[in-house]
Image 1 (cartoon, helix red, strand yellow):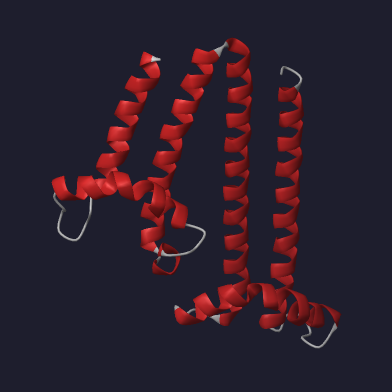
Image 2 (cartoon, helix red, strand yellow; image 1 turned 90 degrees about the vertical axis):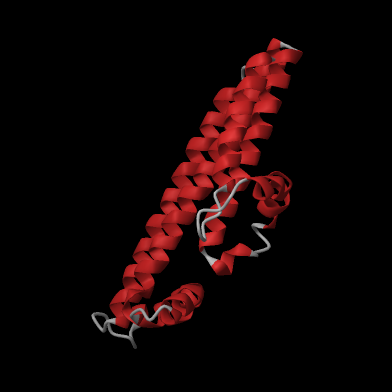
Length: 196
């Protein structure tokens, strides 16, 4: 198991580099698209065709969102770059978290059953907390709230939040049951993991 950890660290470093390279390439393509949209680059030249044929179809969802929000068409590439950078950060964090779980389980399994149980219980509490956070952030964006990519967060967190909603009062239009649930999960999680 000890030889697994350097391999995981190397793969993680390679993944970070690949994500950074993808975001850097996206920055170049977004700069070209911005140049074509603002007529700083010839829209009928080679870069203009590249922008229209390759970059603009990738920016179409961002363009719809910017147009619906009343934004400028020239700002679409920069919003696309921001979305790409945010997606890169989220991907790196998720992969780092998964690698951390694998490393923890590998070390715990080498140390015995109680250490492995402690890691599994800790991961379970972490997944519950993550589901509540994803659900809260998803509720800020109505288009994401019922996205098929985020349904797992509702499925995992609803059994915890439904009973709390019946007990915890709202503060006007603000539902504070997710905050209460996060606090309870952290307190109970520390108590349970500490007791193992």
